[in-house]
Length: 335
Image (cartoon, rainbow, N blue to C red):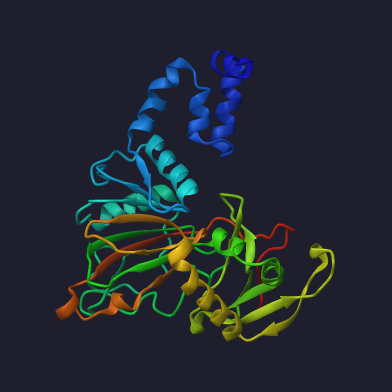
């Protein structure tokens, strides 16, 4: 009571909460709990933007009846979206129609720096929109089909978020998602310890990323990998020093060893802890790329004549921190 009283009526208390909120130490909802009466209207507006329903017991939230096409991208709305992504790891806004490319990019820019590293298809409505399809005339084909993965592992920092907007969906065009914290926790102690000693070497041998590291926003355990053959050159294995801070990679195992193990585990767990997302036209998802891995199901490339046209507009938001393990060791350049 006294803490709440001080925060609400003391200028010093309000300044402490404000500074903590700006630093990201407390969420907007904690800040609202201690807000002054003059700030009550802003907090009320935050709660009234939209309501979130759980997509699965483990992760994901669904928003109905909120139009991202028309909403003012105010600091309060952006803070709410980011806070919900932190909690749910994926936020799915239903019924967004066929959003203009400029609008999708504008929303993406509010989430961070838009980073476009992909092929620009002639049918794409914007240079920062990656247009994906099951028809090569309409968009890039075969995307996400090489295996379970996190996007952007070929860089020093993988992408922080993706936005995924479906202008058209085809029969069987699912995207499979598995939350990485739960994937790690589903393993026995021996497997977790073995994974903790592994470093993924990127396809061109440029970077080595810790397979197990701390999520830079959520602070819990997450994983880094790509099961597509072109994207992983192998796995470095740490020494067995009892002090993790003194361990150093001393050997390497083939890329296929871990890619096959991960694929088997993910295929067996997706129905239990993940989801095989069946999209609807107009869906707009914001995915925590550092908190979930994903895979484009075979049906995403079903023929247009029999399954219908699939069109996905995707943007990617740059990662902001180098992957860092609990012991402080970070991703490093191989050459």
